[in-house]
Image (cartoon, rainbow, N blue to C red):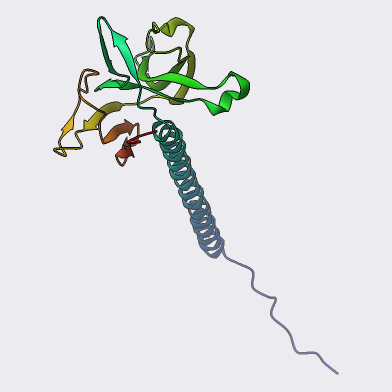
Amino acid sequence: MRRLPTRNARGFTLLELLIALAVTAAVVALMFAGFGAIGRAEERNQRVMERSERMLVVSQWLGRKFDGLRLLSRRDGDVFVSFFSGNAAGAIWVAPLPERGDAGGLHVFRTTPLRHDNGSVDLSVEAVPYDGAMMALDWKSALRETLLQDVRTLQWFYQDGRTGEWFQEWDASKAGYPARVRLEIADERGAWPPLVFPLARSR
C-alpha cells in the first residue's frame, strides 16, 4: 500500500517567538509590579501600626502619671505654692512611681524636650524622689526616660476649669490646678491627634 506524502509540521517563526517572549515578559512584569505594590502596602500598614502603638504608649504612660497626681504644695521663698507648674515646653507635678517597687513612692515628674547635637528633639520625662515641701529639685540625679524620639512639634496647654480657657503657662502661684492638660505632638509623618489628660481633683 502506498503512503500518501505528508507535510512536515511547521515550526514557530521568529516573529511568533518574539511575540511570545514579549507577552511572557509583560506578564512577569505585571506579577512583579503586583508583588511590589503588596510589599509597599504592607510597609505602609506596618508604619501606621508602629505609629499608632507609639501614640498609645505615650498616651497611657502620661495618663497614668497624671491620674496619680497629688495635690501638694511646696515652699517657694516665703510662701507655699501648688506643686504644679507648666509652660509650652512641659510640666512639673507629683505622682507615685510604682514601677520602681521598693524604690517607688512619690516622685516629682518633669516633662521636657531633650535636644540633641544633630538638631533632633525627644520627649523626655525626668523624676526625682519627693522629699516634702522644703525639697530642692536636683534634676542632675533624676531618673530619665525617653517617651518619644525625633519629635517635630511639642506643645503643652493647660485648661482653667473655671473659664474653660486654655493657656500655655500655668504658674505655681495660681490658685488650684488646671482642669485638663493637652499635649500636641507632630512627628515625621505629621500631627498626632491631641492628647488630653484630665487631672485628679483631690487625693
